[in-house]
Image 1 (tube, rainbow, N blue to C red):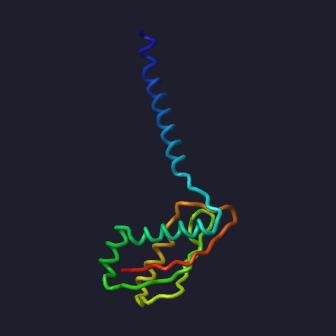
Image 2: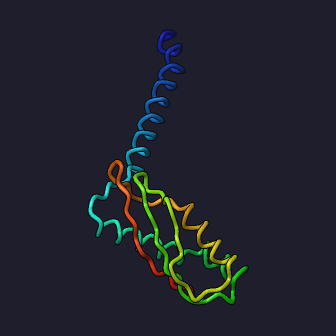
Image 3: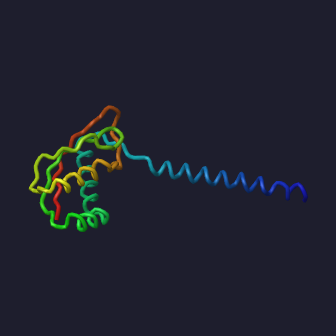
Length: 133
């Protein structure tokens, strides 16, 4: 009986360690991002995520607070690289003249990390029209 009582703390620590490592492994597995290889897939994914970004509650709250009078469209070229980050954000055309808002949009998109990856040494450029209402 005494030996079993002495082993309880060790068994508890081992069990807890196994639980934590299994949980961490499952979390890491769930965070794996899909690799897109076709240009059409990348374009669809970028369009979807950018639209979601500009419909998010955080964006709308800040836009309505700081830039409530801004309405219009912005056509941009977005270049996505291997790890799902942007390598460039270039304004092609816009009817929005507020430079601070355009810089805010640029920073917002440049800080966004997409939910996909590209093959090594791959880069895609996507032309996107962002409508601001």
